[in-house]
Length: 447
Image (tube, rainbow, N blue to C red):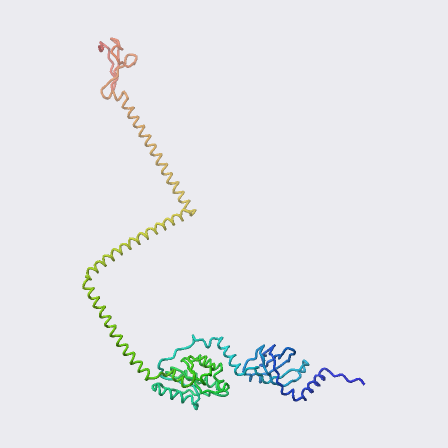
């Protein structure tokens, strides 16, 4: 007889039921390496646990994921607790995780180290953010439990060392669920106390679980947000919390924190007295030194005439002022010349200025040519006048004007000798004005 085949859903339900009836599948511890970690927006965690030979799909729902004190990461080896069930929609079994512990290290310690790394990378613990403590604060606000021994220790130490400092309690729950938020609120309240100079955040020692409120981000940020310096004294010397790293100063215990912010008034008085003595000695020594210097300066002043030195200095000042003015004038003149030359060169290189310069040159050459032509005409005219004057001076008429005359024979030839005419010949005598006619009646020749 052929068996009836299962449907896919029916066979998957058969496997689911087979796993459900096995009690060892309801309380399983599995150790492996986290991979393919996918935090969902719903808050669920989906990841795979693997070793060298196999892989196991895992899911941690939001309600359980919120209780995990550390942040799971890919590559981390963890121990998970949960139950094995079948995811029918995909036909595969998976581990439904309700608790995760890191392998080889406590979950709280890992969570603290992860938070330290994140806040340290942000710079929250940098020394450059640390504030200096006042030498003697007027008022100290203590953040701690109202009923704990830490407040009594702080009060006892400060009352003994500095009874003049006001002590104000800002109460907070320092252990258990919700303690971190009450500590942060107490720090904010302390920050608002009028005249507060320092905030002391203290509590006694305890286990790592007891100190967890001081290893939270909300407390660290409240410390850094405080307007006044914060000093921590949490636990014992070996305890170092995130609050200690964020604080401006850290003390090993609450009593040590009180000693840190409240210096002994007796020691301060002794130190003040010692400083007063040293100050008096220093003042006397300084007065003696200055008196010696004053006497030496007075002697030098007596040897030197202030009036003469002042007159010489005034003359030197005037001379230097004159040199300075002269140098400035020379510098200004030189720079002005260079500026004018540069401007002229710039104008010369501009086409419009070059055309204007060429036109000016043409006009200047035209004037020069006209002047040269005029001078040439005048020169020629003067030479002509001179030659006319010389010619006129050589003219017979000028000779006649001086009283001489010209005698012409009957043929109008100039008579230069007596033998050139005959007796009885009519001759003409040319004078400077008019002529005379006469007959030769006789002649006399030079021997």
